[in-house]
Length: 144
Image (tube, rainbow, N blue to C red; front, side, top):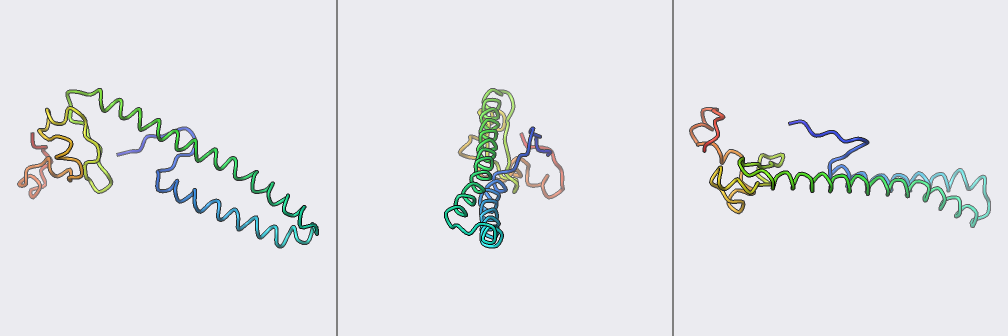
């Protein structure tokens, strides 16, 4: 299954969390190194050195924060749009699976089409929809 493409740079939530933690720490370490070694030689006044470091932090932190919030807003918008689509389909059992093949989303028509209510199927493996003999033989016909 191919992921939808988005304009701009998009990350999955786990990578976004990692970037949101690692990037500021790495940037702060870089600014501290510049402050300690480069600015210490160029600017003798601690107050002026503090102002320059603060300016460097603000210049990077504001665009980074705006980018993170835009990614989150875009993902929330995509989720909301997907939920509307999922709720509007009444004649097909629409589901989403996690990377391990477990059902994490179940459309309202799933009970009529497949016979499972959301509380019965959420968290169960996709193989639930196949008869045991089809699984052992490798047949991919969905049990209905």
